[in-house]
Length: 364
Image (cartoon, rainbow, N blue to C red; front, side, top):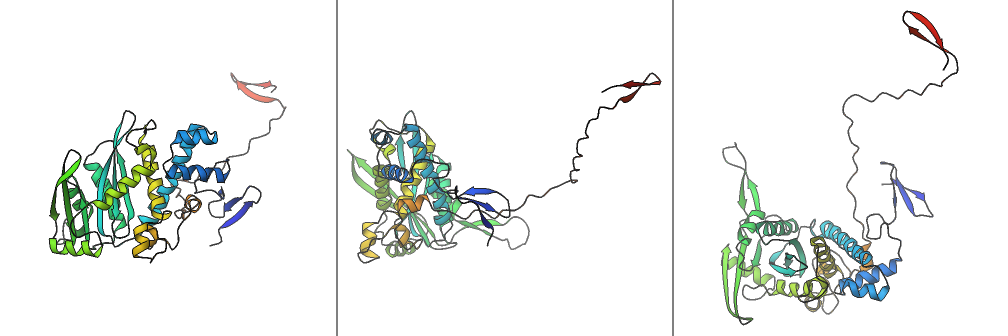
């Protein structure tokens, strides 16, 4: 639109002609405000994305542990913005979704990481980290899945035996319907083509001995058609989300079951989850997708979902810029402020003061 002008060529700064503010070329990316070489930062984030502990990077590159942790959080925040700007704003025909949770044992904390994915393209859709495994976790996870889905499309959601999922799914996938009388508040109605499947496994001596599959909501015939359409198996299952859970545990160092670098902050877990999830969607080719959809060519879940047409590098992911919201000037309410009068220049002339009915000359 021609609203950006060059402010300083040497420092690579620009100026907006509308809001009159200056900004750097790195504004809106992970590298904003950092002075370390970009190549070093990309190498460190790459190692973090492949499961290398922070302590190993500290000893290898001679960096401070707080610096590496800060870069990890910055990269996670950048990936979170990319995920919200590309995945959650794109209406996808999900067809088949699977959701599950990971129990995370950290330093003096026990956290739960809820994950959801699209089965047909292996796209990671949603993730939420919480200290407690309660209904709020399920509600937040399903609301995030709802933002990725097209309205009133047929969808099958498979979960484990956690009782909070069916009500949370119904609460997220419903629309307002006007009443026939024309008065009162519009009621909320669940999507007519929503199907909820539950897979309950019973284990003995760390082996699955019994699997119970039920439909919590919807019609079984239509659900089986969606299952076949998404190539998600012949029966209800949660195998795909369990495989994604294994990838998360492999790539995120703080999710290792027995380690000396366990997580101590919820924010670090969430940033690490977004870092692994976005690199999984945009930067890592999937073997099964390369065989089925692209005939031997490398394909990522984002490419299979139509979000991009090429494999992203980690540098492209960390420097991706999202369009900021349109700037609107704030309204000034009330009377306009009076202009401040200029200060008068003091003179050395004597001033006259009235004291007890007579004039008195006082030198200033």
